[in-house]
Image (cartoon, rainbow, N blue to C red; front, side):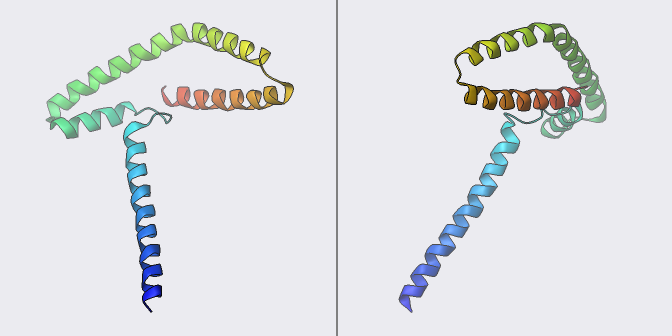
Length: 126
């Protein structure tokens, strides 16, 4: 009987640890967003409004400022994108020279995934 209690206790602790790990990981991922889609303008305004306790007038002013900054950054990205694409293409070409044929095929798949993610992120920033 004592042995079963010990086994059940260990299983219970393991399950609690897994649940706690999942909750903590989810919270960290939501806060960091290192690889995810950047927050929308609306999310930024909503978060600032909530955290700073903005009134309606302040919220309207912040919304105009955030929208203006977003538009300026979008224009800057549009201007710099050809340079960035050139740098990335050059780096990929150089990397390919160091790879075996089997690695090159894998690399091509990775590059295709990266391009697709970038395309999705760019569409989300419009």
